[in-house]
Image (tube, rainbow, N blue to C red; front, side, top):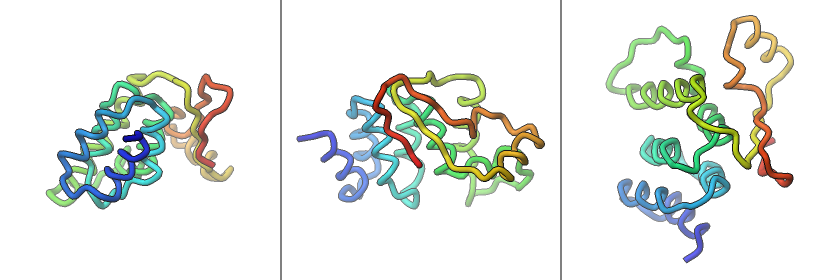
Length: 148
């Protein structure tokens, strides 16, 4: 079975979250992890994103993509109280934020760039928002998989 079939199974066919997490662990490239995130439904919970974040092939481009897909910037300086409804989101946001800040992930073969307006970039810089969250990641391969 092709690895892309595993992505389809994880995102569209499996109802067992533990089985989906197990399949994530079998993926063998950063490109497949990145592709998985393009299809994953975040309403299915944080199990698969955590498995991606913990995967040995996870690199800075993937972590930055996880950060923005999870809207982790909301929690970066938020003073909102953590409760049973938002605890999982808070914990994932904290995990991915801290790992990006300390350089847990290496720049690998993938590139990633979120689109931000000049106003947004100005606000990020003015507020001292760490650039590891929003600066484009340039991977080492000549043909890079990019998010517009």
